[in-house]
Image (cartoon, rainbow, N blue to C red; front, side, top):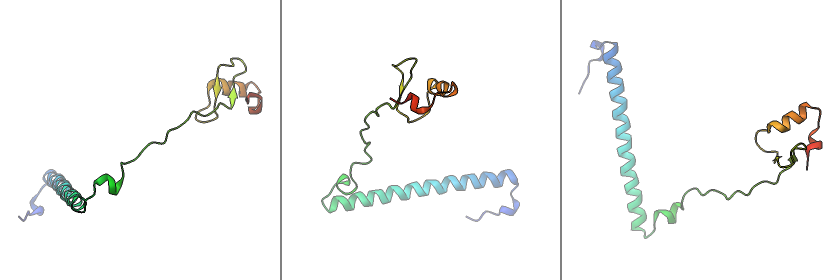
Length: 105
């Protein structure tokens, strides 16, 4: 199918480009599906499972809470581990002339 692009106006040309890009993406997806099927068939033919070859996927590490490093002298229930954004009470204490070591636990 030959398209004479010299006879197309700007709108028609943009429409053709968009349709071509959509079709290109469709073809790529079809190729990926076929390749995925081939890989699964090969793995099965060898007597393995996908998980045997590639594992179970990403696993999150169990994160334990971090011990607090700083305590608000005005309210001892407020603590901060020193990670992430500074709490308002910490910034306020620094502005009031306190040092980080004064707030350390």
